[in-house]
Length: 67
Image (cartoon, rainbow, N blue to C red):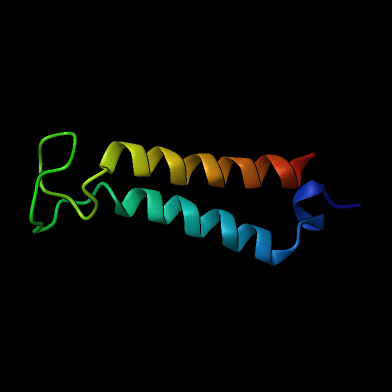
C-alpha cells in the first residue's frame, strides 16, 4: 500500500521535471541580442513571463496527477 506517488506514471514526473527545468533555464544569464524584461541578458528575452508559464504548466501537471 504505497502512497499516491507510487501510483503516478513515470512520464508525468518526467513532464513535470522538464517544465520545471525549462523554467529555471530561462533565468540563466547568457549572451543575447537584447535584454530581458528584468534588465539583464538571459536565454529568453521574455524571462519573467516564460518562467512563470513553464512553472504554471509544471504545477498544472502536478495538480492533475495528484487529484
